[in-house]
Length: 81
Image (tube, rainbow, N blue to C red; front, side, top):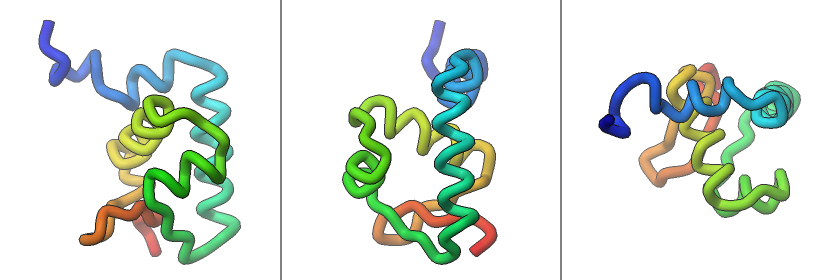
């Protein structure tokens, strides 16, 4: 199976885990509570105290859901900001 197939998408993988779902909800709430929040992946890892792999998967899931978008510099911002 190819990793590009939908059943292997980061968002689907994150939905399968309750702790991951809770983390996604936490991150969404923080972006809602802090309009204009702009974070690099490294800053996100430190802020939320998560490892690189988890951070990349969560950010990818939020990009896929179109909750976040990436800036030209590669930082993550809320898509509606």
